[in-house]
Image (cartoon, rainbow, N blue to C red):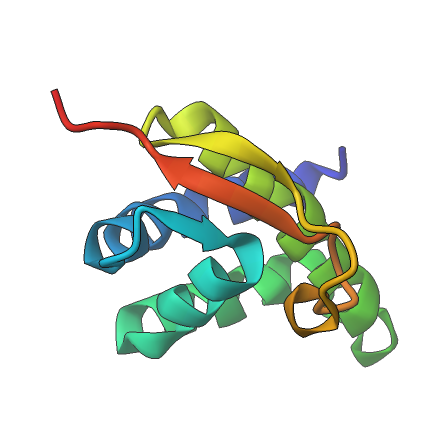
Length: 111
């Protein structure tokens, strides 16, 4: 893990939790969650800030997106306690953003 990856985790944790809370659906894809994060001004600002820590060089933007979409966000989801992994989404081009493996997440019941 690159040292700036830790900073990206810190930046994205609160916006990710807020986005999960806003989602009406109990099952969602990583791509859907990223769209929900970016739908709020605070979430979009956090996304851009995290990207800046991962890929400050314009030539590395794609790599930064791969780390953010494929490692940081799924990592935060796994450790959040708010959701569980629901499996990979195979054969659905609409869910493939080109930066991470399309995955399904299921909200945990509220205790």
